[in-house]
Length: 215
Image (cartoon, rainbow, N blue to C red; front, side, top):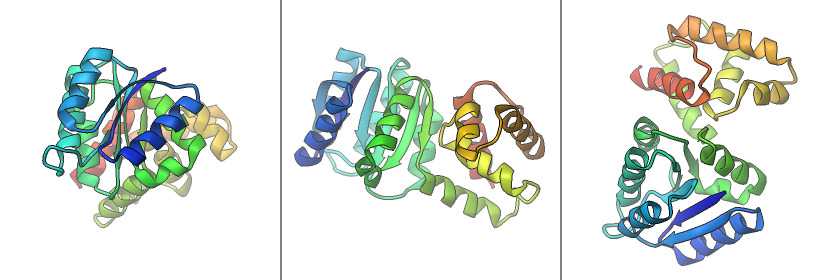
């Protein structure tokens, strides 16, 4: 697996690079600003790009815009956005533009090494990784209009794991139920939300999140 890391903080960037390399991920490029990040992704065509939202030259949302550019023009590169702050709107912008793997995690998650590396691998493989806090905020906002009232407690648990990018097999392992049971829950979730089920885990996550955001 090959990665490019975009982060303007030298200390944090070196820490992420070291963590990735210690876990068998080859870092083929590093960038301290958004423009250089886009150039290096185009040059190296990595499996995944890790992108800080706030980067030079303006220090506002340059990293986000770079992530969206990569998502649109480099479909073979997964995009994992790292944010210091929880921002649901930023998360949805990244998810909506991606043609390949996509993820949005808070930087605090980097210290949880195994889940973080797992998320990088999922995004590089074309899957998704959504921070649980982003999902919780989306569900909380949507719940004010009670669109999820028809879902059972177990269906909500399955939905949360779906939005993190988990496969049916991984959900079954996490909830200690059979994969067949998970498939039935997924089917009921889509039926209750009026969404057509699909075998594509990435697209089904985007569909569920789009539904939540529309409320």
